[in-house]
Length: 233
Image 1 (cartoon, rainbow, N blue to C red):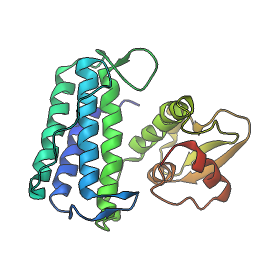
Image 2 (image 1 turned 90 degrees about the vertical axis):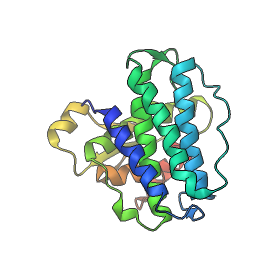
Image 3 (image 1 turned 60 degrees about the vertical axis):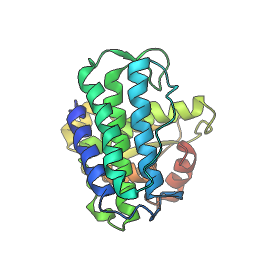
């Protein structure tokens, strides 16, 4: 299934920017114990700037981000500036144009549309969680399913390749309860790991995504054991 990622990203960054104006920048971020909200905003701004550099320069060696404004009331506009700079590059660059990405060999600018959309949506949930507003986070099941596919096909193999996690001895098959049957048949299953021993984890696509990224606890003991080693927090 093809997603309109550039439009999804534009909507996601605008919501994140709006929320930075509503949420106390000194609140702790539950998913990132060493961070407060301003650190989260700095991180996402840095990631946007890094992606922009990867597209324009073809390498990951982006310069350091400009300093966060001392007046934190300026934080929403500061973040929006970095997000809009990325969007401008993505809109003016053909999707098939060569760019540095996480994969081996040449990647494309279009790859970053997808990656930045999922990054922004997950960190929007982190921002809401800092304010105790997790219930306001909603994601389309098909989009959450795509984000889970990204974990299985890109993040997990990359973490293994970089020795950030061990290769799984038990694979995790994700079973969504809210994905249309036709779409599931079209995309196929999402399985993290490539071994015969498999454990299944069932839930809505959004909840599965939050469990995989350690934003929700996994109550299935065996699946939780797999998730503990599948990706870094």
